[in-house]
Length: 376
Image 1: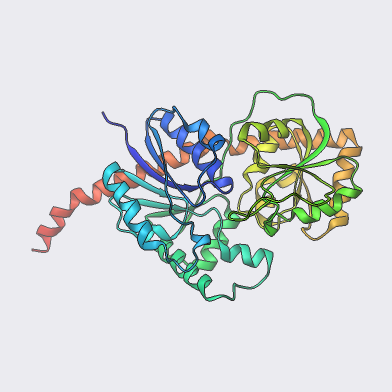
Image 2: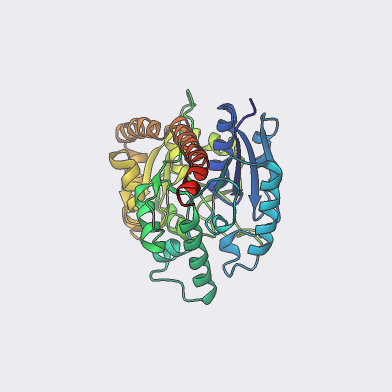
């Protein structure tokens, strides 16, 4: 028997790449054949390396624009032709889109949309209100049309699912499938350092507040992530109170997480927070912003501070760094909490969703002649 085939889109700018590549590799281990199509800036060699040599996993690096980089939708015709040509060649049983607007194409198989983030919810969290430029209204309309056209749509947390439903009114109930990661068996003795991760240029990550707070912290703060936005040339950073690590491979970031005693994410906006999960799985005590997503996912396994409360962030981080018993207690809470969001659970949920949708499509097709006779 030939394996069921999955066509999945992804980008390589943020955590969506980690999500998509981990999921694709795990699905191949379950008997799926996966074609992963990248959109936006191409993945780096170290991003591609773990997928190379995985049986039944094929990566296509395209020149297609990401929807938040092309809000007016000028690249949509090109995306339509490119992706449907790939689908014609692959003949997938399921289409998995890690974006919104392409779901409106006439796909040859059931299509799901996974909402990882969106500009309108980002804007509300980071700037308040709604975007005031005309292209962002086209973005909203295209995203809403994609959600409405999908056979199913998914969000990684209940809080974000509710946001997407409120903004886009998709007309169908979404499904919560938490992101997941594999927990390491062990990690080395922790070092007296704080780790943060994210795009330094993205105001949603709120790393500027952590940078200001760092001068008042007991431990040094190390920040992993790109210094410049896509399309901007790299420049030497000015004087910083944090230690910028730049873009790291997954393995190097995992090493940093294993070393760090504390992981801080003071984000204003985070639909899930895969790096938080990975840090918790590696035994970090967590200091997180008090936003609905983090409250939902981490409960009593983290210290929470308001995204604008620099003084509270300093107090919380210094308490963890200065009181070993408190830090160890929070590390012991975070790690078992992280096991709730395992890669195995995530893969099980997607595998079940894919198979349900393909079964429903086959059932609908097999019943079509009978319905036609009834109406003859």
